[in-house]
Image (cartoon, rainbow, N blue to C red; front, side, top):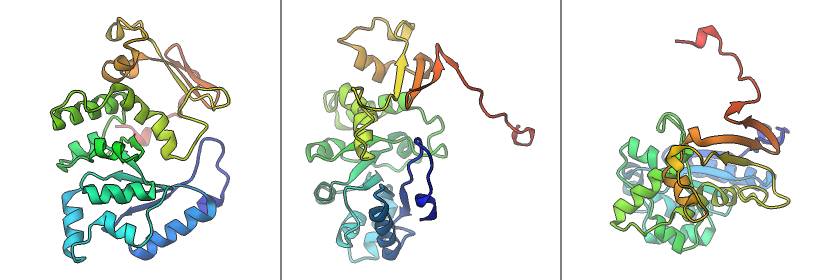
Length: 260
């Protein structure tokens, strides 16, 4: 709570995190929600990430599943970003919808860890749930590459559902931008429009992997063909950090003790 009270500048917004139902008590969840309400900030928790998590919990709680339990103790609400949700039922999807919980889809992390599950993304979208893309940590997704996240997530879902039209490139791009902003309860980022913060990534469409680029195919190009080498300029909160593929500020020097 002391960290949340401190001022952290424009680029740091504290959030309340609870590891997961497999280690946290109801008291911890209630305490987290109280702090989030007190300081008007978001919450985050891992939820139904693995089959073992779900069935271990259900077997020791009279069949009640993690989402069902968090719903029963009134933890679920519109401040919550639930990571993974790879093993949820349609009953649980409706509970997430009712509470306006936001879901972070971490497809690469789930696959690297071999969890074997995937959130029912099309059904979540149909129920009005905001789904964003998450990389998880470098422990389970080494590159933390959002271009890679977009392409992999789209292809994985299309293959799993045997349907190339199950999700559009535009929706995947939205998940990485405007839906991510909505998950953070931010209306001043995620969309390029007058009055919003200038958080912009400019892409060089002249590189061979994006040719030909035009208004009709640019979204598909970004999702399925682009990679970090295409990034020409990066602007964060109106400050240009990278221009013409060159960083405009020096990175902190690495101590020799930390070098291999």
